[in-house]
Image (tube, rainbow, N blue to C red):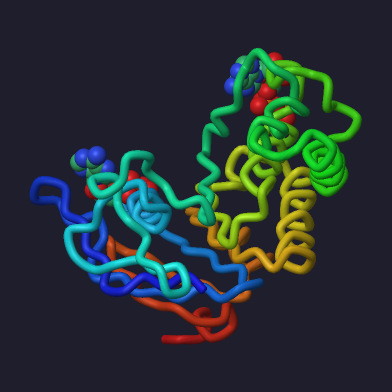
Length: 225
Ligand code: ADP
Ligand code: ADP
């Protein structure tokens, strides 16, 4: 379980995240919706241990997630963040991009797991192409496959649908459903588009000016005055 308690982050004098607390259970899919500048990216980076909070803390189960000022290699191994720009290695294949995340595993397991991920993410047919030779949706799925390769407890995604057309949105949506169902991963994504959030999340939060102003089931949030 991932918990954030009273997270605060101020840049210079601009409050980016103000007193945000959330709990993410295994198998839960949470969406945080907010306009540009509402603090979505900052919050994701705080949850991933990639930004130091001014106050408040993030915990994964009983362990505190340390910020970059506290560790040599920022980021927690059980919490993965998929950036909006995917950040794939441009000169190696889709398959090798995914396999790289498993480089410390024995080859036979690595081959097995990569094949499983290619299938889950519907990338088997394009596995030998380099990122430049695949579509935006396929790049997105490669980034997700890489992020979930060694079965992190938590997957965080920055605007995972915003660059995708409708067929690809549906594929990624199904992929996230499969992921939480088969691997008990928790997913949290941020988006400026409430439609994406409503179509997939079991919990919906609304961010405004760095504050989490509502949090609940999509039905409850939408019917709250
Ligand atoms: P969102 O992802 O919802 O667009 P951000 O988390 O990027 O929101 O930004 C929240 C607020 O913090 C904005 O006012 C933004 O200008 C400010 N901000 C974000 N990152 C920085 C930074 N590195 N330095 C200064 N201000 C920042
Ligand atoms: P889609 O048609 O699925 O929306 P994109 O618009 O992302 O795909 O990509 C269209 C084409 O633009 C790709 O096939 C590729 O040739 C090129 N392209 C897109 N993103 C990148 C990138 N990050 N690096 C190199 N080429 C890219």
